[in-house]
Amino acid sequence: MNENTVRENSLLPDNANGEAELWTMVVIDASGTRLAERLDSDTGLTLLGLMSEDPSSWEEALDYWPRYRSPVVCEFPSSLPLTLVDSATAFGALESRDQWIVFDLVQKRVLTAPAMSLIGRDPAYDMCAAGEDSPSCPLFIHLPPWWEMLEQVPVSAVCQPRSTPIDKPHVDRKVLYGDALLNDLAKRILAAVESSLWRTKKAATDERARYPFTVAVHRQWLMTGRPDLDGRKPRQLLHGAVDWIDRIIEGQQQRFNYTKQMIALPDSGADFDTAPMGREEMVFYFDLCRELIDAGWMWCIAQGDRHAQRGLESTLSELVAFLREVEAMWMASPFEGGASPSFSIECCRRRVPQGVGVTIEGMSQAAPAEHVLDCDCPLCIMMAEGMFGVAFMGVDGHHLELDEEFAFSMCATREQWQEMQAEFVDESEFECGDDEECSPEEAMAPVGQSAQSISGDSEVVAHDKADAGLDSDEFASAWSGSAADEPLPGDADGHLQLAFLLAEIVGDLQRQSAPAADIKTLNAAFVDYRHRSPDEAVRVAERFKAALQFLAERYPSLVSKVADLHSRIDEQLRTPIRS
Image (cartoon, rainbow, N blue to C red):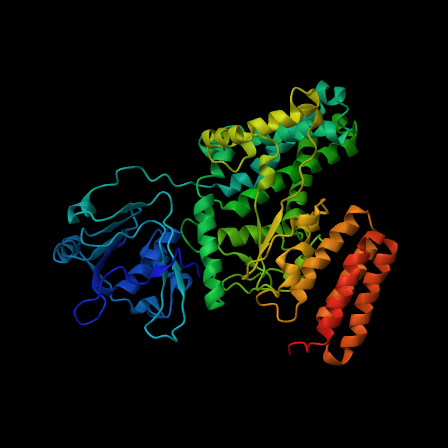
């Protein structure tokens, strides 16, 4: 737990008897007003955590209790001492107390008494019971952007209306994922294929020439207002909550590190179907649109002139049916060796991270027990095996910025996007200058798929150079750093230290265009070496050394590094492996 962000679990000073002060709490929703006159601050903070999920009613808020509960509060929310009262009774209780908090679910706001300590919109607490042996459990609170946090206000503020409208994104997924999307894309694809520009650019046979058409169709879908969205553009539905949902999911990941429980947000909430998008859903929606457009081009090219003979209406119907099948297949297929897009999107909507092999309570699906990394780095292989703790998968969305188009950007507003572009304008001018070949219309290469990021419970030193096979000078070599000469924390067997060195050898092999089979054989020998049993230690070690020696003979530049690894392996054999 980060000591810089997690504070003590009580906002209030102890009283003369050493007991925590008690709060008066009021909850207002469409069904009425609930009052708890004496509620301990730990429970009050936990209830504040429930507001992070943007509940529409008190019953819905209580469904979130397992995601925020800690050992210092009651197990079941039915034990909470709240009773339905009239507004006058609740108002009177607040006036008679110095420490109070109000959760207004109707107007989406939290209010606190003038005597209360400041809480903030994004606090974090260590909900640890008294006693040195008591387990810690983090509580992360992140109020949605459209919620008001009114602190240290008079009781009269409870009766006043909000100062600003509730600006909550409303996502119509029936439009974004339904036939509205497919019909729109199909019409634009057919119009492009019939255009003179398509023929002039020879886009049917030139993938590079076809790419600007892909960008144009995608941009037009996102940036065109629609009657079925009350005039809004589809792009407007994607933004407004990414950072907030990122923080919610990160909080649940940190909580898992302590509780070993992953609990999904219930999908029974009143606003679940129209709830805002998070990062993963936005990124996969981008990828889905590109997949559909690319599939549309291929369909039209395969059809040739036959679609002209059937007429536009019939051709459009057939293309939409084809795209519907493409969407269903793509959403259900494994993505880059991992979970399917549909599963990743559901995790995002249920606000839980994807832990490899982690069971998510409340969801029928689970992330694959193993993720097939498209990578030959020994460190990545160890990470996938769980050496650094549970691996959490995610997407960063960097490729949404590669087209340098506001329409696709992760930035919510054009102003934010322009500021980001300004930061790179000098670098872009240096790289492209006035060269016409840098024009996206003429030279834009197809954008790759979403980049996957992996994180574990332990900090992992970056190994990008070795992984990507980039040139590095002597001072950047793993053999010149502390990883080569000093034991690494938590690396009792020395396997992590060997992995850093081996990663550099893999990078050397990649730079020299070594056959993939040579690298895979080396990695397989290292895997066997790490998982050896005492009775086969010598045999497995000799096989690992032989794999290294084979490469040294084929690639003389590796001789000194292989010799050093041989001596390190021999030294490890003289040290009993940890049971």
